Amino acid sequence: MSFNVIDNVKKIRNEVPETVSLICVSKTKPNELIMEAYNAGEREFGENKVQELTEKYETLPKDIKWHFIGHLQRNKVKYIVGKLHLLHSLDGVKLLHELEKRYGKEELELNTLIQVNVGEEESKTGLHKNEVNDFIKEVEKCSHVKVKGIMAIIPKGTEEQCRSYFKEMKEMYENLKKMDYNNVSMEILSMGMSGDYKIAIDEGSNMVRVGTGVFGNRVYK
Image 1 (cartoon, helix red, strand yellow):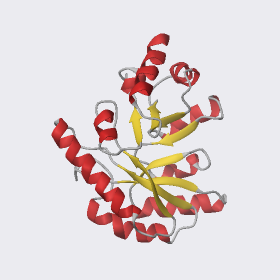
Image 2: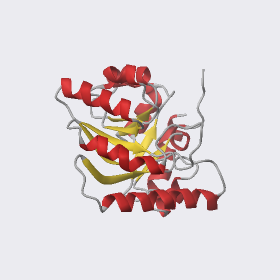
Image 3: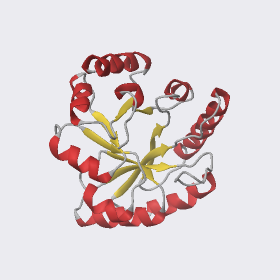
């Protein structure tokens, strides 16, 4: 098992340009496998459950940058304060206000990405495209939550369909980049996962989230 993770990391690193951040999605994976990727040079890991993230945060090396990529419930916010490098799934005003309150209490800042439900799928969280501008107005009122870009999990489909969603996200990203907002800077376009990260990079992604490609298939309890 050991050499698989190392080989996988090497293979992906050969395919991901230096200008693109690689997040190793370590959800459900044991610390031993995370340490194999760590020893291969990786420092950015993604989790989608608060309890799992906090346990790993306590036990794994302190120079790991933790990304939270799942839907974050408001009642769990208090557990992640000060532990995240980046929250990928900012997806509503109530969550924004809770984050602002909790981070404000500790006088800390949180870097976030707005999650866009680009396929407008009912099964996925995230803002619809037409909600993003109003949401940004709410972000501008905050002083502890900073938006650094946008993120999407696109619908499954053909390569052509994937490209069209990625293109749509890139266009939105470029349009937002031209605006002068308070607390909002468009630095990160996070899109692309194990099955489609090469296409996403082709279409302008500068951050990809790869789980299976690094760690192999997930085993859910």
